[in-house]
Image (cartoon, rainbow, N blue to C red):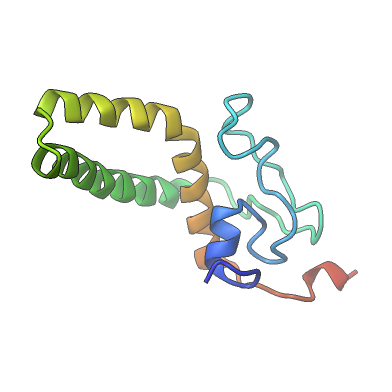
Length: 127
């Protein structure tokens, strides 16, 4: 499931959806230095990461949906299962989301572009 050639590999390793070799972002997964700066093109297969203006608008909805369901599950787990207070559960959630907002942003963009771009194992061999 997480091997090269799967959508999950591209998404969670922040790799190009077409060749699965080139990086999509200038810095590492949780880097707070240039957290939103993406490369223009894949350094390996030359895929254009910005095919049209406003292309990543749909990734905001993916981010919202995943964050909302995760937040509900997170608070329910800590409040109902572990018996924490609502305030402590939400406090921990806020800390968690603040520390991981860069990764959520990046994963959402990778999910969006992986919907539209298919893996091509020969992409790096093309001229």
